Image 1: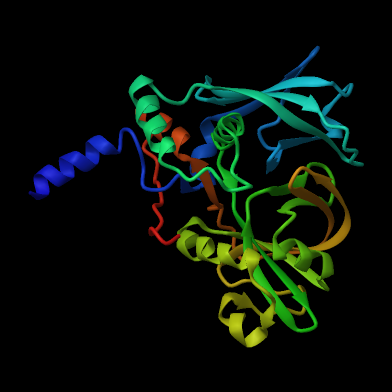
Image 2: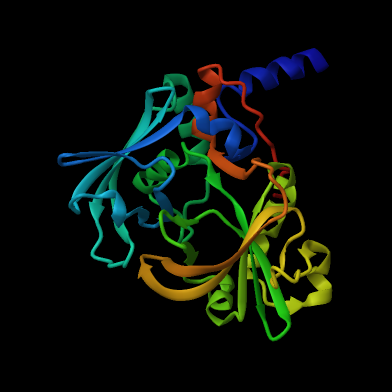
Length: 315
């Protein structure tokens, strides 16, 4: 019976995986990945500078310093081993930012699944509850799948106000290249957004992938209130003389942030911060990220030997 179950599991794994978003160590995947922005007379490598900041609508941002001229329309292409995995059609947003050009996606091309995988995944999607207000449309979903054919870093935010605290993960964020600034996107209906607005101190910790279960379990805190220190003290490093901010207990490094301004686009609030301090706890390059199931299946089909970190069902 166990031989039959094992064989069934191996066959099933060619068509679907246990998590829609698979945790990985970003560092292990990046050597083969490239993201290219194509627009007018410009072709720009934005692998390490593009920011994914929203999904309804799909929001991508590129530092202004990358451009000679600011284009109206672009195509963002995602490559692995020089193979095109997918692309996003982008139009420049009317939203103005001092350091970024903000784009919204208008369409996508997806090259991740073979015919049989597409049939299996279509049947799986038909069983999902799509009546939620924040559930993406079919077109938006494909845009998301393309965007997550790149390992998106998951970091941990800690906010404090009047000696109460909250701690929660984020993956819609990133540093603005060539500037001591950081951008984080938060949904309009989450308590986390309100807490960031009102916080006295804010820090963001980069975490090793081995703590993936712990970090994912913090996701529920996006909709929870602030709590006394004693309730989350086991999750925090205490401030040090050279870094007077709390950081996540298991983090590699941490930055302290000061709010500057924000933009609202769709259901997202794009908040920009100054980086006011930083600390390295370790030289570890391991960085917790996740990719979409479709991209993980594509990599498996192309014989990449990825270390996929599968979360428990309640995560």
